Image (cartoon, helix red, strand yellow):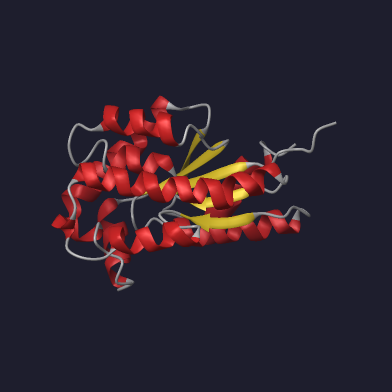
Length: 209
């Protein structure tokens, strides 16, 4: 029999919704189930992709046009796919990523112009991979924005677009769930971290072999 393929799980949602924290907790839970997950992120997750990350998340909001951002994100994602995601899945390891292609569909395709068709064409040609499960963390954009800015991480280029941008993002992610109900699960991210983590592990457990 062929080796089993790992489960590919992505976390999505607006900035400050707790994706990174919950991705780490999920990876820990999977290890407790005697699995061997790879925890990664976008943009980034591979050496070349991490270099592109700095170009995208630092600097002034107007640094790049939406079209240029799409190309940069896709270049980073291709490196991530080739060097991290695909080798792990083929080795039978689960992959837990903080963001994947859905972020580009929402951030550049739906909120910074009517560019969704361009995003989808480039994705089909250059990536052509979707997660097995996408967990969309949802919360009030104003609360999430305050959280994101409070981090003072230096990677707050998108937060600096302001609250109206975050509100558009939330609407975009909610629409994504309607578009892909087979793989997208809505997670209420307004509860305490333990409750959120329990909801996530329940959703993931249903997908495990």
